[in-house]
Length: 507
Image (cartoon, rainbow, N blue to C red; front, side, top):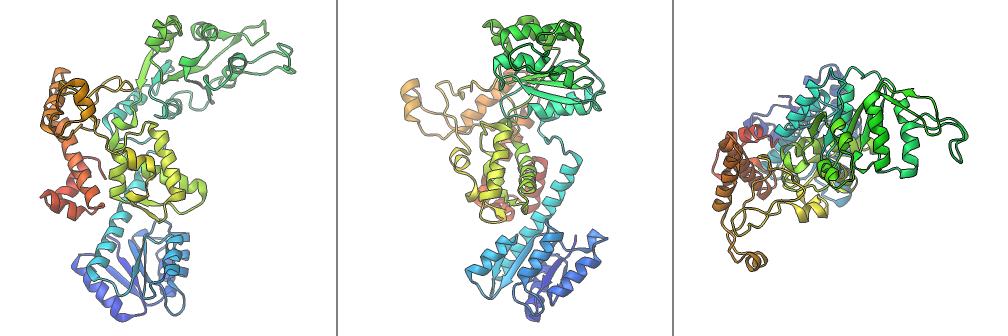
């Protein structure tokens, strides 16, 4: 591991910190001034392993202040955690330190165990950010370790050499366009254009012209010939988002293009050949739309050659930490500010939120946190009101002991949070159903029965993972992310909780 750099003109402070950190098996390197640190950073520019893991700096030193050093270090090493120490415990210094991107503010005289714990937390955060950055560099287009997302990735791989039509289904905000772009990027048409159009966002009278183009004079205002999206996507991919909202008469024209590859511009008499791969997406149940007469059955079958179901974010809770860090990095880049970090306790709270707006809602939350969170390290108390109010909702059990099904979820998924209801009665439910709410053991039994009845052969692993995940996340939330304390409260070892966090994808 890289060393902890300590910068202080007081030899006694350096000595005490060095000895305390060495007892924790944390290597150190000490400096007496900001100038020495900057020179050492310059010398280590060509070899990252020679640089610091964490920088701990005094705020008032001869030859340059710690705040000036913080500014210069953050300009060149934005991901390096910097802890500022000062004997002048005033508000201005604290505010300046945090505005400059400090990891934490440590007033002197400090409690040595607390200082060591803070440095250890900065080390953990630094190592976690390094791993996250490596993962993001390796998979920049889409993130997801959940089994449901791995199925999507495998499908994209299988379709990489195909031009077949694909229908992507999933709730609004779940990332359907990202999947469409990935299908295009990894297809033989990758060098061609990717053209997207939301058929629900364009008025019916304009949609036909948008899709197929128009000839000069085709209607009032058509001063010149215009190429539509099909022609713009020539040789590439056309993504038709919210295809379920396409007007019925236009569905007929789309069917013709998919059937024989030809279409006519509005007001035109010459057939235009379309060399385009079509990928469609919808959040609606197209089979139900067909039954209701709102969608052509023959078009549905033409589109439904290959169907990819994109899971809702609540079905892939283990992906929330990685997505959160990714969106915090993106938001900081867009706003031109220092990327914020997020504590384990805040991630644990986020992971229990149901995210009705899916990945798009998480992205918006991260943008909000980048602007509104008061410090560089986001704590659970900094999360927006809708998360604080809506995290970890417990669904009441009906009279038969099973949780009521959500109309938004078409099928049960083993990665969804295990419902652990309280053993007390819920008055409204008791009045309606005439029964008491069962304990969590009954809920577990019902869940197991449901999975067994569905023919699952991984019930033990699925429920054990969810049970252990919920225990660990609850303990981390209780201890504000302190793993050692969480392990002690759970009655397990420090190495055990670290291993479980890695195995369960809770990192």
